[in-house]
Length: 171
Image (cartoon, rainbow, N blue to C red; front, side, top):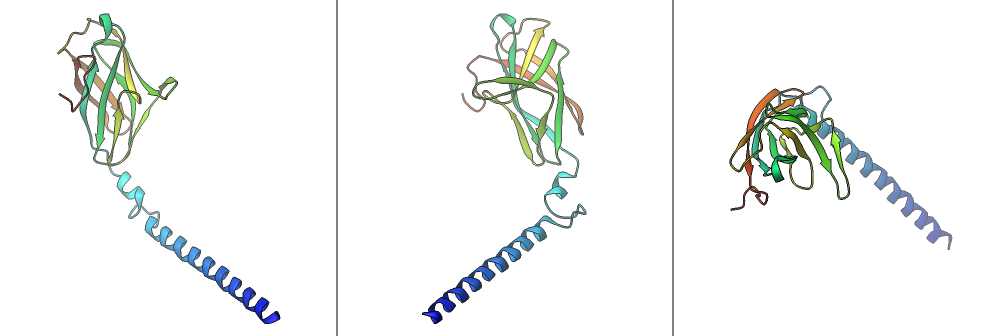
C-alpha cells in the first residue's frame, strides 16, 4: 500500500509543479504583450496619441411646447483617449450631460471618449438635457451645440430637431 501512496503523492507534486510552471509562463506572456511601459507597445501606446473627434447621428426629439429636450449623438474617436467636459449652446440657457440607469438619471461632470472608440449618447443611456430655449424649436430647426473636450478643445455641431419618434438609421 505504501508504493500506491508514494505514487499518488509523486503524481500530485508533479501536477502541482506543472500548474505553477504553466501559470508563471502564462503570466510572462501577458506581461510581454503589455509592453515595457515606455509608450512604445501595449494598450497605452494607441491611447497616448491625439484624439481625432467627429460627431454623427445627432438629433433632438421635438420637445412638447418648447420645453426641456433631450439631445442624442455619437462622438467618434479615431485617436487617443479624450473626455467630454462640457456642452453649451448659444440658443439655450443650459445644456447638461446625464447618465440614465433603469431607475435613475443623474447629471455628470464629464463623459469618457475611449481611444479608437465611440461615446454614444442615446435613449436610455448617456444623453444631453437642453433647457431654456431662446426660441421654441420646430421640426427641421437646427440647434448649435458646442462640445468641449479635455484634449481636443471645442467643436461646434448643428443638431437637427426631429419628430419625437425618430430613431437614427430607421426610415
